[in-house]
Image (cartoon, rainbow, N blue to C red; front, side, top):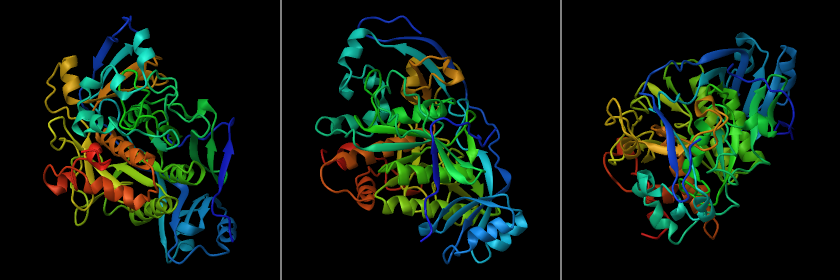
Length: 471
């Protein structure tokens, strides 16, 4: 049988990138250098990658397919028999169409998959904990700013933490721009061995490099997302205390990457890391008449099914374009609308749909806190930011955080809502007994609070305490 996983590992090799403090008191943190950027809109157009193609074969991959690709001057980046997926480099569009006849073919593309800080209505603050705060860190109830994390209280996480917690053996793969493992609230929570930079390498493989310098977060987004899932409970608490984070860096320092990078990252998270939870707070909302769209959707759906067969759950952000998703509507949000996973819309601190959140009953499974800048005003105070946005960690390797590993962000977006659900999934996997992906997904959906129209919230806004059986 043909080898199904072509993933090449190195810890010290140059990669081809696709897209290219405060004084502290003894007991309380001190915040300085706060800044705020109002929401803005910048282009997130997808750009085709010449010579790169995605194939989804309907009747299996032909035994001589690699030879036929080589005959046309191409190479195979990855070939996954069980999900009938092939990614190639070096073919012309015409040759790719001929080779993929009878299946689905799409031209690989690069895009900016996540919002900028401006688009997430970002505000920053540097906070350094006093020595007594460091000594007391451990329980989420010891997190200094837990009282101001409305998002954790909205989903009833503290009620669950009274008797339920996460397990360090449960890994959550964060497919994003990387993670800052040196942030004061993430130190010790990141798997330094399995975290990796993953790309679809034109030399003929899904490539991953595990050297720390390759996967640290040089943008900001992945660190922020990660801190919603879990922290070491120093300043803020995450949904799933004690679980481990795995950085799967598929985006560069602008939040961009290729579609094939995303696919390779999903394969790495499932086949190499064996993560039971994969969080993708990233996405592209694509018009329904885009060439190759069916190939893109089917490729992700097939990998999602592979993840499920390996015991994992995929959680994705619905997107921030305020669009009605699903047929017969003209837009498709990927990876959110592909395969059996959890597609998450965003709620505000008022437990209403966020102004920016995509929606649509055919797409949305559940909702979770994402924050909303609708009521911030022109010059919001720090108190207002805490009331309206979601507070999370910022990477000290990202320019916006100015080299500080004690900086935090207020921000809003479905990027924040998805990791709340990923954290809940990790908590469920942490409990005693066998847990199938389908059972975890069903439990999250059936225990959600039905707070309104299903086209906006799916089965409802998640309830951590009820999902864990403590409410």
